[in-house]
Length: 162
Image 1 (cartoon, helix red, strand yellow):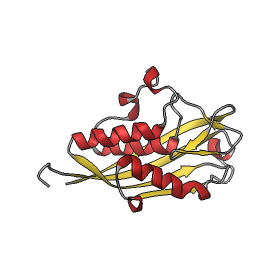
Image 2 (cartoon, one colour):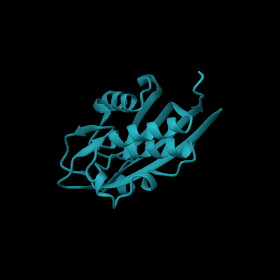
Image 3 (spheres, helix red, strand yellow):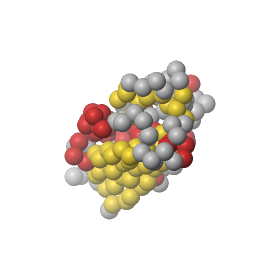
Image 4 (tube, one colour):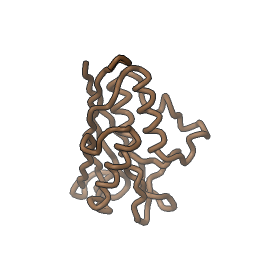
């Protein structure tokens, strides 16, 4: 049996924070504001995986008022989501995602993001797609106020006898 889930996340860009996407710290004068490292890419992927398995969203599992998750790497949380869905009999097949960010351009970091995500989920790097786009100067991402990400995940059920 297969299921599909989708995820979306957005965070404001602000001074004094790291810009972390897919577990990669990207040099830039602004970073993403949030309780954890605010990695919108990883957050969207977690919501897609949790949604595919009907397990709620990351706010339910990692609330922003819980100090255990203050400034935590979202790759750690992604690894926990991978464990959660496996405990329920699901495993990731593939994830497709898009980061929406006017600047900086992130193309040279995408391969490392894919490797980080694949390692956290214990899946092949070929099963992880990360794309990037701008909004041609339109909207909150286009004017440099924030960054968003969208993700779609396919999961499959398994049994312990496999």
